[in-house]
Image (cartoon, rainbow, N blue to C red):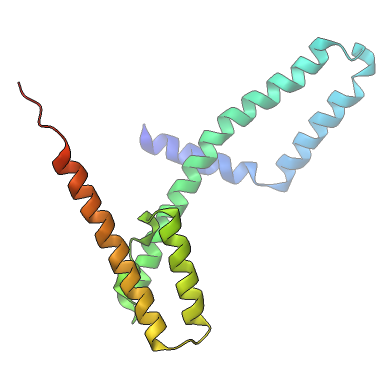
Length: 152
């Protein structure tokens, strides 16, 4: 079932991203708008476009999210492979699991290092990644050990 939905999501997102689909959707909206005077701009006339677009949007959110999540995982795996096979710091692997503040701080440090502020700045970035990861690991361990054991 998972593979069937993954294939469906991939094909649907590829199809939905084509210009012809946009033109088709635009044509539907134009036809709907032109038919307005014939239906006296009634509530039913408005309900047709509102219901149709809501249903399509609701379903497409799940399909596109699935395709995007799989693409993101594939990109992360490729980047991790590049890091592992190059002279880059292996500490950068898994940084996508850091929280927003840690990622923002890391981004700032990497930007400074990229501007040529020296080797020490790049080392600080590397150390800060390791520090953030170890803090996160420690916090997880504390949460796990703090959970009460269920008694039977």
